[in-house]
Length: 131
Ligand SMILES: NC(=O)c1ccc[n+]([C@@H]2O[C@H](COP(=O)([O-])OP(=O)(O)OC[C@H]3O[C@@H](n4cnc5c(N)ncnc54)[C@H](OP(=O)(O)O)[C@@H]3O)[C@@H](O)[C@H]2O)c1
Image: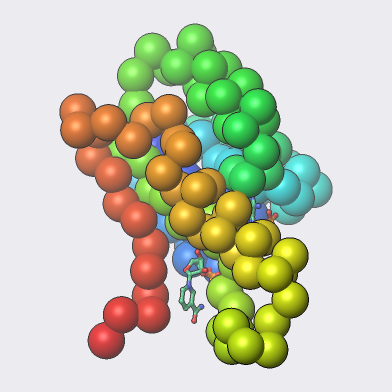
C-alpha cells in the first residue's frame, strides 16, 4: 500500500536518493529543501508522486507553513525522514559562534521543531556519522 512520506533535505544526497526510491515505488513524497530549482527537477521526474515544499528547516515560520500545507493536502503523514542538515566538522575553539549557531539551528532545532515529531508517526532522523 502506498504511503505518504515527508523527506527533508530532498534536493540532494541521501534525501534525494530516498525520495527517488520511494517515489518510484508509487509512494507520495512531500519533498522539502531550500533549493526550489532542484526540487522542481525532482518533481519533474515524478509529477504524479512528488509534491515540493521549498523550506528552510531553520525557519520556524516556513516549517509551520509547509507542514500545514502538507497536512491540508494529504490529511496524514505515514513516514517523516528528518534528513536535512549541514555536514561540517568544526573545532569549537577555532569556529566562530555564528557558524556553530547555524549548525545547531539546522541540524538540531530543524529536526526537533518539526510539527510531525510526534509518537504516532514513524520518524527517521539521518545521522550517518555514527560508527
Ligand atoms: N555525507 C556524510 O558523510 C554525512 C555525515 C554525517 C551526517 N550527515 C548528515 O546526513 C544527512 C544527509 O547527508 P548528505 O550527504 O546527503 O548531505 P547533502 O547532499 O549535503 O544534502 C543535504 C540536504 O539538506 C538540505 N538542507 C541543508 N540545509 C537546509 C536547511 N536549512 N533547510 C532545508 N534543507 C536544508 C540540502 O538542501 P538545500 O541546500 O536545497 O536546502 C540538501 O538537500 C545530512 O543531515 C547530513 O548532515 C552526512
